Image (cartoon, rainbow, N blue to C red):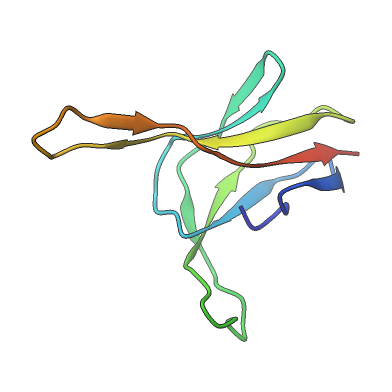
Length: 102
């Protein structure tokens, strides 16, 4: 997660996009705050900053479909499945970071 930066506080509750580095298109991104879960849409390619920092990964952007709750900490999770091997498909859901709205 590039923006908001993991651990960020005071993030506007009208946040429209979240930016990720190194992720391709998927629909497995979600925001979690207590019992509330907000599924984000498919990641779209985002422009890499210019000048490009050394070692920068391709970036993707996900639209946030609804205003967020004020003063709330959101955890960002990414679910992906690895398949196509002799083993059964493996699904993982790592946490990419969290941020708190103002």
